[in-house]
Length: 418
Ligand SMILES: [Zn+2]
Image 1 (tube, rainbow, N blue to C red):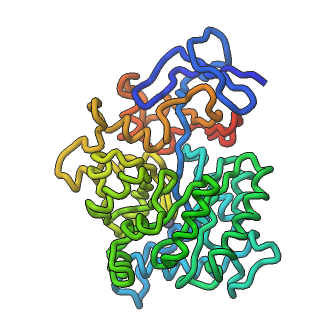
Image 2: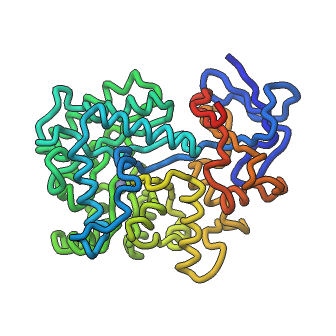
């Protein structure tokens, strides 16, 4: 069925355009341009949906529970937080995994995320033995996404050592065999794409990294890994391999144009150069990195080298893409002691850069999946803002409450006033 939506404005990374219609057919955008007829959406602007490029959906279950010190942890940091996260991971089964993931994904849609990358590493029963279906927990996550109606890039994540038994596989071959089976299953699931990930340098040894990279390259799949989030992790890597984490990724062939390094908080100049040389991306998770006390992204160094950047909500202490983008820029300002840091060449404001990071595109275009959000222009946070300032007002002055609806594949998967 063909539909033409006519909002008050269409938003792209450079502004708000009036009198434009978006024509949808079979879940895709087929036309964007001036129209006189169609379904009017008064008081609404349409914008691309936000991409949440790093999620551990089950950690939504930690919300509020980890915001106090344990009496035995005078020093509370990432590592003590991790113990609480392990306790939660111990308790999951396929049903509770699906419930918590579905709650998380529905909240994402309400916040304006239309697509999520799930970094999935809870694979087996608590004692480490496999479920009858060894992909039971991965499928629970995928089904949660399908029920909610959000687009999913699912990354089964290799874990070889440390952590708890249910994270781990015995060999890269055993792990990749499960990935093969999951990929076959996903063929009939329109909203689900499968990529692959390694958890981190501390959880995955050198020979596994090379093997995973080879698999991802052969099958043309996205490849993700956590790196440089914590100083201790860098010291451990230097001790074991005599080099920093991103250098090790380069040495093992892990870096490529489909590779995303999650965090890169403490990446040094050489590591940023390697990311740039290999055309790899970085996913920053500002609200999580702030919550865990990780540190600040070297944002100016990333901009300077034109390294691809995306954002993720990671542990979901908060789900709000506007807040992630705002923190990205304001953290960079605090570090630099000045304003307007993430400004791309030829532009005068960080807004276009930040929106491109959030949307992973510039604008809604014919041929793209019909994934977008409706922005409520009557909301108090944007009321009275002149159209020429609208996109900056959204990034710097608004939050998820301005999202009135989220559409995926031409279907309104979330509607605030329903
Ligand atoms: Zn993570």
